[in-house]
Each structure stands twice: as structure tokens, then as C-alpha cells.
Image 1 (tube, rainbow, N blue to C red):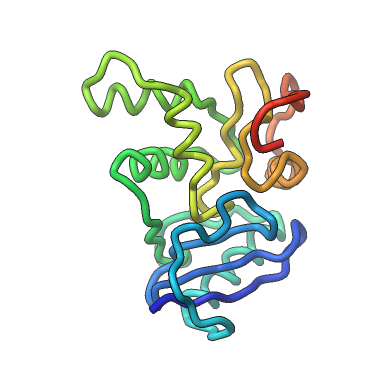
Image 2: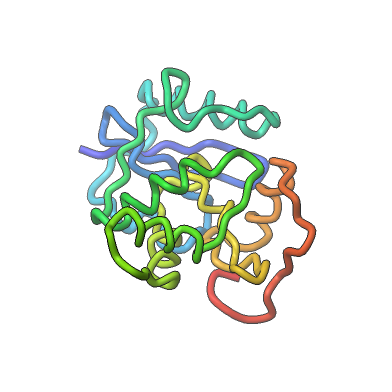
Length: 181
């Protein structure tokens, strides 16, 4: 059984999903790939994991730096392939207010798997299908040239989240065309 709940935030309504124990989804209203991994779900049941997630989000939007993992953080259980899980784990290591690139993540995956190279586009696909936005911070990934492209929640939301975190936005730019604009 899966459960859905909503949280009102400064970036709009956020939809939360749980398997009853862990958070399996967190999507900003209108986000690409919203709930694509969910089956039948019961709406409006406030579970302890939703309360913990709401407390985490309250702290985050208040400008604090809540931990992604640990006793104060909600238990996370995103559904995805082994490759996607590796990418999402790396996203969790990006510090609050920090940035990395798709290429840098691809190099880390190549190193971890013993390959000589890894496709930054494949990494981009995994980042874009992250089912637990904000907590698993896919908004902290930018193009190698400073392009802000690639946020399923939209660039305005990505910029809003990075600004909230005090990320260094110098050298970053809004692309004129591409995906997830």
C-alpha cells in the first residue's frame, strides 16, 4: 500500500509518497515525472514519515541545513535501478549550497564501477528521474559550462532553491533551449 500527502511550501504544493514506513516520493506540483513510480495510493493519511518530512522541509525552508540522513531526517526509499541509486547516493553527498556537474557525477560513477568513462547524459537521466526532490538534492547539479538546465521542477524553482541555500550563482546562466526549462 502506498500513501500520499501534501505539504504547502514556498515553492508551491509538494506531494509526498510513502510505502507506510519510508518516503518514496517528493514532487513539487507540476514536476516532470510526477509520481510515475506510484501505483494505487491512499490520500490524506498523515503518517509519522510525513510528519518527519514536514519537519525537515520546515527547517529547510527556514534556511537551516537539515541532514539528509540520520535520526532527524525521514527514512528514504526511492525506487530505481542500481545505476539510479548510485547517482542518487552521490546527490546526497553534495553539501548544502554546493554545486556539482553531470560530468563530475559521471566521472565518480565511472571510478566506482571501474569503467574508463560514463555518460553525463545517462547521469542526467537518473538525476531528472530522482523521485525525492529537494531532500535528494538534484537541484544542486548544473551543466559543465554553468547552465542551470535539467531540473524537472522547472528552472524558476531550481533557482529559488539554490538562492535559499546561498549557492554561488556567479557564472551560472539560464539556457535558451533544452529540457526541463
